[in-house]
Image (cartoon, rainbow, N blue to C red; front, side, top):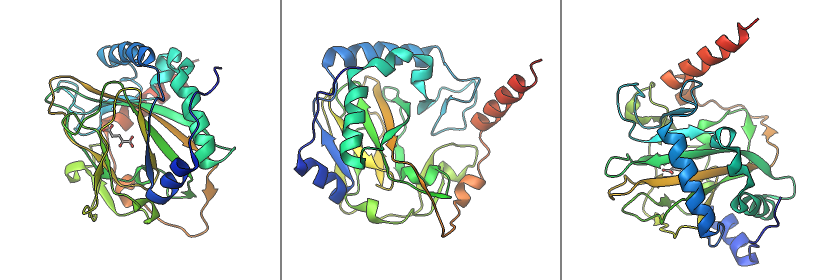
Length: 267
Ligand SMILES: O=C(O)CCC(=O)C(=O)O
């Protein structure tokens, strides 16, 4: 593994803990971004992971004959292991150890594509709302666009300090439990900060930070490669429930269950 080339200043570490997000420059060399873009486009074009439920439409009902408005791949590096060798992966882990502590480790990667003029918005949400309610988390997502990210093409936007909130009530997009994506029911958006960044830079956000990305109104795809990092979770003593997840019934879950069943039926 290569050596990290990024070291956060104390001001950056303090900013993350105070505001719940952070912009970091020069995380990936531009040549590496160009190569990652090729890999990324191949993964989406070949619909890798579709049968196992790992490629789906985050913002739609995921019908086979409809073009996805917000295609997502869970775990793209298992289909393209070359991604794991990237300098930005080494840098991301070093950033995680600085922000979360020495025990921080990768929790996986995913990819969200906003097709030109067609990519839907990613609604306001907190990442923790997708997860098990049984644990307390100390984690973040590192969001790396594979081209410049602008307000026009769907850069990330954050509500500063919202990581200090509890997990707020969420619902499936359009209140349709067949849709994977979640949206917060209600949130104070008066202090929103949009974070346009250049290719090679990234943003980082805490698992409770409210965030959003607008639709892609540009003529080129908006590609984001996202890496998760966490310290070990702590089992909660005070129970809570996330009813929005209990109600889910997505085609993605059905494909995943069928894929598991077909492996289990092998002799
Ligand atoms: O890329 C996007 O549109 C949204 C990304 C996101 O929600 C995340 O990284 O947690």
